[in-house]
Image (cartoon, rainbow, N blue to C red):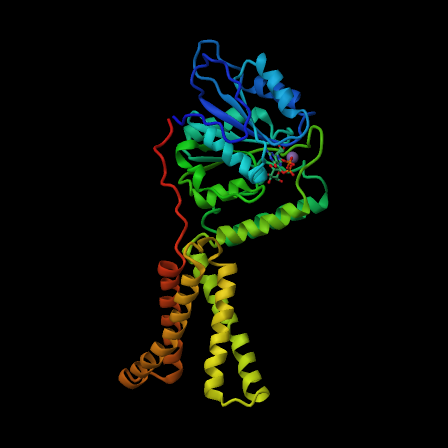
Length: 395
Ligand code: GDD
Ligand code: MN
């Protein structure tokens, strides 16, 4: 079992001293939900009626970033709530909602964590069902889905949110067909996950879509779904904003670039885009400055290399700039120029030695050069940041 840690700036935890080990953790991120706390707790207690035989009970873990009375109300309620309540109030709300869920996953105890919202759009009555579905189906992840048969998203207010939610789901599924194949509602914020199947330290959520992050990075092997009706907010208003939408797009890009396949495609696109500065510079140097086309081409090629380097640094390899910048630039420059030098003998071999047509030989040499350059970039220029190795499984 993971030992509870108190993260920096967090308030002390409240928990009965002699509580039996929790069966699972209900993990609820909260941000200014003071009007919802009482009703939420009432419904959670009703749904998770504690056992009187001293057997394991679920634990409620709130990760709170509120500036209102939410944490105060939660702590007050904890005193006479039949379920053990832990309130982790973060002074610095790092990572927003996604960061809160990751912080909660690190503190969660028991075999499962059920992640849900505090505003009652996620019915508490479904919590035991999610865990039961995971246990009986031996799944690692159980998604409460608005799109599975029998589910609905009536609580999504207005056409605008309906369209945005639908488009986000479609886009995510297009970009991650394999990872999200079995998940009809990857935007859901309501799910149960087997703690042994996730490594919270490896998660890098950006904004709201923590389930998508988890499904793509942790790749739970077995996924189940339970339909549900996404209700109306009980009180207060949604914290989601347009800025959150933009953050979602960045999150998608980051996730896509977290796999070698995604990086290879982006690397190829950046390479292709280098044709533009190359031709532009060539024209400028020859027609504009009257330079001979050969030295002009050499210079134009250096310009394209610089363009590619800058773009790769800012996009594809943004998170892998672990070496010193001068080392990255030097290696990249060498690689780019060696590529030019080596492609000529390769071409000569393919055409002269193997009798290939010039066009085919050029195409093949470009593909080979692309693959070699990508591999060298990945293996020797842009090394991944160290991700902590998974700790032993939780109970
Ligand atoms: N700790 C913490 N920190 N909690 C937060 C933060 C934050 O920065 N921002 C929001 N929350 C909490 C809210 O208090 C609520 O309990 C939950 O996260 C969801 O926030 P809402 O503001 O109600 O989000 P929503 O209804 O727009 O979005 C929900 O539905 C979407 C599906 O349409 C979320 O569940 C999304 O994850 C989900 O994709
Ligand atoms: Mn909500």
